[in-house]
Image (cartoon, rainbow, N blue to C red; front, top):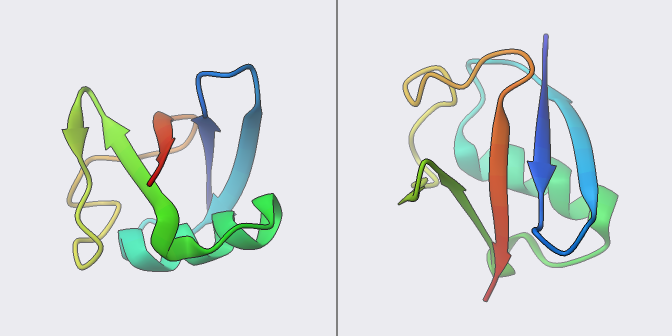
Length: 73
């Protein structure tokens, strides 16, 4: 189990617990439940690169205490 911090760049930071084997799409669904928005409207970026829904967090080298940038469509 890892904990990832998501920053929407407007001052709101959210921590999400998940498994490293989860896909980005699965992670977005858990995040959307915490934020109260549709997961399809969430865009996640790490180091300026947009994360694709079908790739696992481990493949993107997202580990415990990693920070991701959150954008909305």
